[in-house]
Image (cartoon, rainbow, N blue to C red; front, side):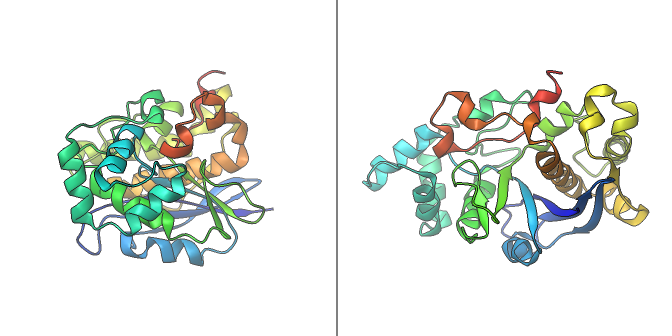
Amino acid sequence: MSVLVAGADFSGAAKIPNDTWLVTGTLGSLGLEINSVKNPGSHALTSELKTLPELKCAALDFPFSLPTEFLRFTERKLEIPEYQQWQQVAEQLVFMSWEQFEALVLEYDIEPKRFTDKKTARAAQSPLHRVNPSMIQMTYHGIRLLAMLDPAKFCVLPFQDRNPGATPVIEVYPREILYLLGLPDRGYKGKEAKNHEQRREIVDGLLNLRESGGQPYQVCPRLTLDKSLKGAIVANDHALDALIACYAAALFVASAELFPDPLDADNLNVLLEGWIFAPSKLRSH
């Protein structure tokens, strides 16, 4: 039986279209075959996800929530009750303008990391990181996107229950995925020839992961990618991040046991701050 999976690299840039890339693939007994590589822009990503038939998992590359310390600051500034669940945070951002959110971030003037950001092997940036790269626009617009997903059709993990028939939506960090797969995780961002060659090396590494990666990677789906789609991915670092996210979604469906359960982290903040899903147990084999 084959199932559909998707991965997206999200941009918070105001210009339309922006570099929000979506990669979809079919996961079956022979592995993961990539079907589509496109750049719909952030404004169209929600509608694109909604049109995918019987989507089994969507992995998205942006922070799904905010650090607890900043949320407590926001509560005091807005004089609102304490956030008890993520849905309240998401709804607050839906009704908050970008200018108001940015003003809160600038006034807070600290860039704390979430619990999950500190747990990654490849240090993740704070969702409030402001320069090189700026994370705050991506975080603001990304959370608003999640709030617009129909909870009858999508379940945003780990905040929402996994309802039968609903598509799990998980937060991923491409550098962490590459590291856990034993592939280069630096030097592929940019437009220089050396960046282009690094992207080609990463894609080739994914295509040959089971052959060259050794025993731990035999559980990973075999990747199939035609020449034209490979060219589009090698040409753009955002497209590559979307491919990595799509591969993570396939791995989550095929071998969920490789992904630590956020509730095993013994930190209840993950139910408010979110969790970066990664096959960490590949490195413990």
